[in-house]
Image 1 (cartoon, rainbow, N blue to C red):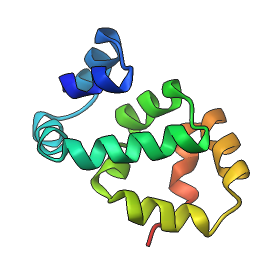
Image 2 (cartoon, rainbow, N blue to C red):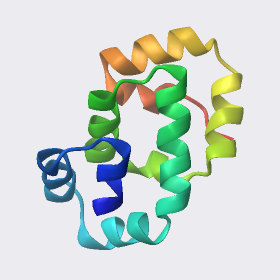
Image 3 (cartoon, rainbow, N blue to C red):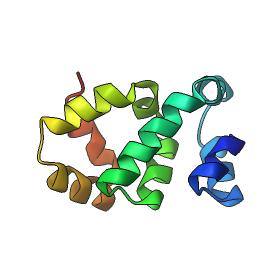
Length: 100
């Protein structure tokens, strides 16, 4: 999970993420790190806060098994500002988004 350091995550962030997920899920994230990095870049680019990203990794990691294009297409169906505010307030609100 060291690739997350390149995305601005701290050692503590990475420890929290790894402590909250099963090893096989983390291995899948590592194997698909390029896709995960593109998702992180996209989410940061639209205004998702890094702390929210950490929460998504900890409690909604399934989001990172999608492609950036799937996420972007789904987010485009909604008002981006509303999604960003909602997610930054409560990362679990990602469950309300219908992903393609």
